[in-house]
Image (cartoon, rainbow, N blue to C red; front, top):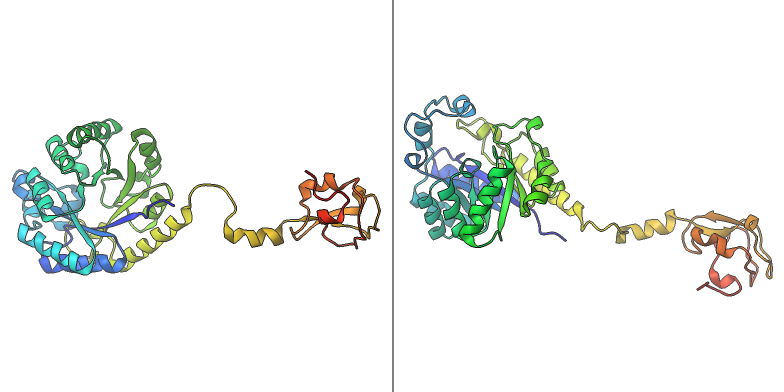
Length: 343
């Protein structure tokens, strides 16, 4: 059986700069059954120049036109990271984060995270990609907005920095908030797996839970989805996030879909064996067959259950001699025929 799908509750910046809310997001993520809760590690001054515009969805959700000003309100200090990590350790959920600078990578490594996630926007940021790869932790790389050539180039940087692509998972993603169904292109999961030769997951920005379930059915090994305490809270990502109850339904659905996939080998399951016995047929006597009679085709029918000679072997029954009387309606067995089971 395949490894279980790794489910990430993306807290991101949905804490709104409030450490108490950040800890509540960790609690909520744990309660939903997610495997990990993920935050974002940045300083506005390392990420944008003052006066840089916000994206359309960010301006719509926050009323803020200045990206630098918006992000300053959403920073978490190193001490706050330590508090969140300690809380996650205490409640039993993995904590990690998305770094937006090489210093942030180093801080997260010192903090003891077990994996690192790179944002779609950083895929072409060579220095950051290389620093994250060189940490030699499992690396999740989001690919929103990217071409296959850009993804292949980032994989080259990663391989050069860490010596191989072991532990690298690419996350298919559509960088729109919320992403419309028509823009999700979930079939890209198969294309990426085939053409790039690494594990594939899915980072979802659509509404609802259907896309992550479909992605699991298409082979995603990791699912990331935004979690919020309340979709109506102010902030750039709340409206495209799931509240805890719906997130929990998504996790339960992922577990079910994952269990449904099986090993891919088409063969009868143990649960089907009893059904096969009653749903398939055997060769049976259509009439009373006396002992010593040579069996002809008109004496035979195929009827349920499948406890005797299989219908495929009916031609091998014709011409055989009955060793004892066989009443009409009897399922035939080889030991009732002269010569027994044919070799």
